[in-house]
Length: 396
Image (cartoon, rainbow, N blue to C red):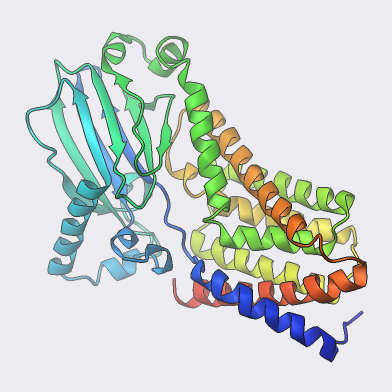
C-alpha cells in the first residue's frame, strides 16, 4: 500500500535532510582505503625481504573520495608520472612507519618501488586496481635478534604487521593504528625452527600467546570498519532498525544480516569467492536504497524482508572481506583474524542500533514514530544510497 505524503510530513522531512545529508556526504566514502600490508619474508638462510603495498589514493589529501587507479589507466601514464608516484610512495613510507631491528642495522632502508595489483601479484586484468609495491632486500642478517615496526603518529592509515617464514605466514599478525608499535618478532626463534611447516611448531612455542593479540587487533579493525569508516554499512543497519523498534523483529533482521555477511566474509577470505569491488560496491549502495524504500512503501514487517536482508548481507560480506582476502594467512591466523574481525563488526552494528534506540526514545506511538522518524530518515538514507550508487558506477 502506497503512502500518501501529507503537508505535516514535509517539515520533519526537511529537518532530517538539512541535518543528516551534509554530515553523511562528508563521509561519502565510495572506496574506503584499506589497511596497508607490511610483509616481512624470512628464510632459513637468514635472508630477509620486506614488502609494503600502497594504494596510490593514499597520496591524495582525501583518499577515500578518489577512484582506484586501474590497469587500463596505468598503461596510459607517462614515465615522469610513474616516477612521481614512486617518489610519493617513498615519502609515504617515511611518514607512515619506522622499521627497527635489534641490534640496529647500519644501512638505512633501500626501497625499490614497482607497480602490481593486490598481494604483489602481476597486473593482468584491465580492471585490476594498481598498487605501488615497495621492496627492501636486506640480504642476510646474522646478528639481529628482533624485528619490530612502529606506525608513526602522523600516518593516516593502519598498517598490518604480517610476517612469513619459508613462505608460510606466521601467527601473531597485528593491525596497528597510527602511533602504535608492534610486538617484537623473535628472530632467534625463527632460526631455530627446523621444520617444513614452521608455523605449527611456532604456535606451540614462541607465538602461543600471540593468538589473543591477533584477535584483539582484528576486533578493533572490524569495529572501525563500521564505526566510523563504514558509512554505507551504518546506513544499512539503520534501515533495518527503522522498519520496527520491536526487539523480536530487530533481532531477526540483524541476525540474518550477520549470518549472511559472515558466510561471504569467510568464503572471500579463503579465496573461494572472488568478486570485483567494482561490482560489489555499487550493489551495496543499491541495497541501502532498497531497504530504505521498503521502509517507506511497505510499512508492515513481512518475513520476506529476511530474504532481502540475507541476500544483501551476502553482498556486504564481500565488502568487508577486502582487507583480509589480500593477506594470504595461515590457517591459524586466518581463523583468529576472521573471528576477531566479525566480532568487531557486530560490536559496531550493536553500537549503531543502541544509539538509534537512544535518539528515538522521545517519539511515542507508532504513528508519530513513522511520521517524525521512519519516513524522513528513510528518504534521507535512500537519497544517500543513490548518491553513492551513482558515484560508484560512474566515478570509480
